[in-house]
Length: 509
Image (cartoon, rainbow, N blue to C red; front, top):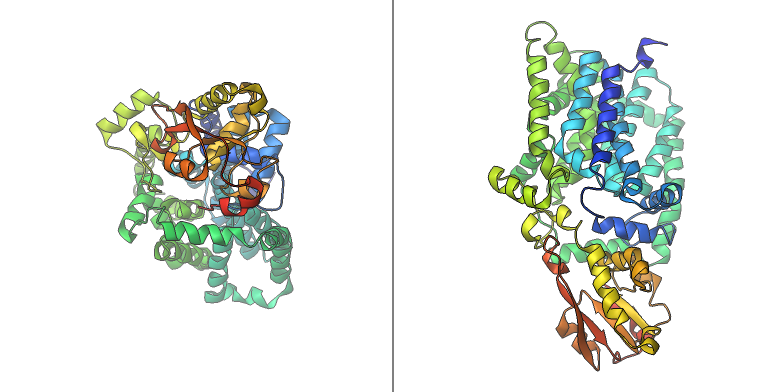
């Protein structure tokens, strides 16, 4: 086996640790709101959905069919992606010239970054995004190093699948294109292989584009509505940068600064060959700040900075300050352990609340939501779903038998709908209907509106829609988001035929 092909045992240990720590905490709390939605999307496989491309639904479908729908099964592939990201980051560092310490510090930086602990815990597109971006950087570095232009075909394949995971892969590609134009690597644009790779990516993306066109471009409608509503919290440039430092682990800051420096200002010709990746990072940093992007949008780019920074730091500490290496690694681990309870559900809810009060730690709020006593939107979205479905099931069972058969359950949002569809069968509930996101496209079933249970809507809105309204239940969990505390209303009947007014039920937000 060649030296370039060997992976140091320490890197394999770090990758394994990244996987294990996720699996050990996989069932600590409950299902996340978005996970319930994706599991429903897996029952309706298609080339697109209102708010995401199709890959996450296929991943959810695969997990359910291979391992069931337990939390361990649902979160297995995100945990595996965490381990692979550690390994691939170290491999990229090796490709750029790092020896064992450099590869280890690059992999450790991924393992102890609170942002990656957080992203890798849940079945979402964000868990796989760093793997696609890092894979793209690795292939670009391989092309530069070997001159093998045919690798652009593999890049196109990776990029195409990455777009089907999340359209943000397009932004990464735009940064790469800018880097190619601004560096000596622009000469590859005169060759056919990069364009063939581009064609491969576009062909893979095409079915998703067709789906969006057929459904009236719902994703763009959704984005316009989100911006108009002011739902998302916008961070200023300084706060955005502070978030990067905190959630990439404060003690990795020298590493990614060194990575950016290495790409742009490396002292030798070798590092300057990879400047295209420096421009990719620079473009994404400026773009997300200027566009008001959420802090975590930039997190997937850091593995390629850690890899380059590892090369620079390894060389700088080789002789003069070698003693700093173990001190730095201990600091990285200590900060990761200190921040870990905010990123992973290690503590009980009660202990977590006390811990955050004592330490004043909290992730930045990404949406204007009342998160309840946990003070953390992601954790709050892991509580109350089973209890919600049980209470809706109790209300449903209280209806006369002849009424239940024609009673639809109207969920205000995809969280409530997903909870009813996932937990509801054991409580005797039919599938939910909703005007929210892709549920609207799936339609109202055969319900006419003669009898409906509303879950999550305000009483005033339900009374506007219905002739008669009764309160038949109350949903409340002490640790869930405050908007998940609501009455269950029995509407009998709706003022209009549900089938006729369904187009007006749409709300993409």
